[in-house]
Structures are given as C-alpha cells and as structure tokens.
Image (tube, rainbow, N blue to C red; front, side, top):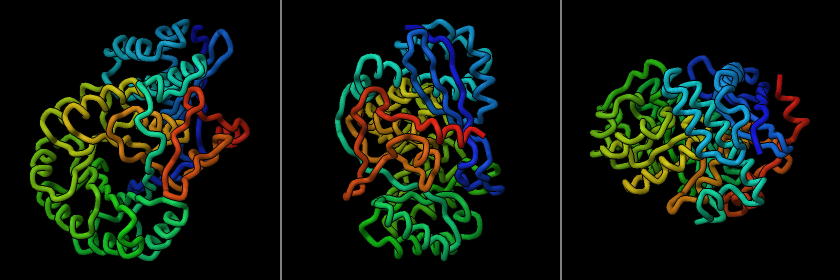
Length: 371
C-alpha cells in the first residue's frame, strides 16, 4: 500500500483565542488537518498546529519524498522526510508538516492492521486518563464564570494561562489565582501557564521564583513556561528552588532539541506537541527519554480532535502518564468528529480502542470549517 496523495483541510471559523496580546479571531487560520490518500483506498488523518497555507507549501515541498512511499511504515517514512529536508530547516514548518503526516500514517497503519494506535505504540498501560480543561486567565468576574462552566462540563483539573496573568503586577497575579482557587474549591486541580513564549516576554528568574512561591500557597500543580523558551539556564536555576513543578517544551521540535532540557534537569514536566514536534513517532521517542530521566511527560495539546486522539493514544502507551490537555470549549475538538469525546462521572476520558486513532471525521462539519 502506497501514498498516492496528501490532502490538506483548512480549519477556520472556530479558532480559539490563544491569549496573545492581539488575540485570535474565529476566522484565523492556525490549524490544519492532513489526510493521506492511498492507492488501495484506506485513508489516514493527522493534525498540524500550523496554518493551512504553510502546510500546503510543506506538503508540496516534501512531495518528491513521500509520493509513492509506503503508507504503513510511519516511523521510517517520517524519519526519511526529516533527514532528507534538513537543508530546508531543522524544525519549523517542515517539521510541523511531517508531524501531521506521521500522525496520519499511524492512523492508517492502525486501520489496515485492525489495531488501535496505542497498541501499535507498545500497548495500553491505562484505559482512562484525566484531561485538564485548558482555558485562559481573564478579569476576575468573567474568570469566575468560565471556571464554573468548565467544572460544570465535568473537568476535575483546569489549567489557566496567559493574559492578564504576568502582565500587570504580582498582587494582581495573586488575585487571579486566589479567585480561581476560591471558585473551584480544594478538590479541582489547578495548573498555571504564564505563557513565557509570548513575544517580548518581560520577566526573568526573580519574578518566576517569587511567583512560584505564591502558586505553592494555592496548591497549584505546576508552573508552565515561567521564562522564555530559550532560557535553559534560567529554567535550571528555577527548578532547583521552585516549590511547585516546572513545566515547558511546547515550542520545541525534533527529539534532539529536548535532550539538553532532560539531561540538565531543566524541567519537572516536559510538554512536546505531537502536532509540531515530529508526530507520534518523535513524541514517543521524547517520552521515553523523559521517562529514563524521571521527567514526567504531558503532551501540549492546543489543537483539534485529531490531535487530542493522538495524545490519548500516546498517554495510553507510556508507563507514567497523568494528564492530557483538552482545550475547551473548542469547536475543532467538539464538532469535527462523529462521536465527540465524553468525560465520565470521574472527569476522565476513555482512550479509544477502535482501529487507528479510533475517531471518524464529520465530513459535513469539515466542510463548514474549511473556509
């Protein structure tokens, strides 16, 4: 079975605000799906956290490398694409596109073999996992409403991120965290994402150290991206003194980029994004490196139902996994598959067991979001 073509599905009309100063509009083009078409009929689908225009350009750039290739050898094919395109850039757009192709190849391999991707990745260490509802900080009054709605949707863990946290002063940061804890009570886990990968991030080590101590007072589970993503020395220093775990890694691509962060002890929790870092093949390699360094892996998942399905299968196949990220509310998660994900009464997600990623695209919804 060989790859005949790769189709790109643009997603627009349901984009979620990502917290950047200018904000995101529903019509913004930040996500795309790739669908592998084979010469024998079966198809596989992947997700890319990159605009459709860049994805289409990447697919065409890589066409001489993937066209006619095996459709059921994801690790070899994605590594061929990676190794053969280094002169076009080690990471960036092409690596993002390779990520979507790799996920789609795993989905296809599962469908052809009649096996779920988690089993192909090594097997099920767990059948359920806790999603954390991923939302933005806001002014106190609307923040309370958003938190209440998130708990009502069944989430028992919530991550709050980005503006206005870290953008005014420390007293206001504490007000936001105190408001969140008072709203959800002691039984809902809270996680905080400062968003240090924002352009021109103004804070350094001393701010992060003080803020980490404040977060500990409210039993926050981790402090994510407290510093710019290139400040490995700052992360190492911070991890050594922080009373809460330090998380990061969503901006990195290729397994080699993660090695110094793991070997030098810069993170308690590493967060590769399978839709950017190189796909499930590369995310699994990073995950096992993290496991060998006793660093927890939690996939970054600001993406689609396809990306969430990939994260669920990866989490199933790891010896230690506690969470998956679940952007909410998010039309590209909740409206583009025929059977949307459902939280159970304990706030857990059941990991799919059907062949491939275990999901089916809603073609009518896909047309609505194709713009």
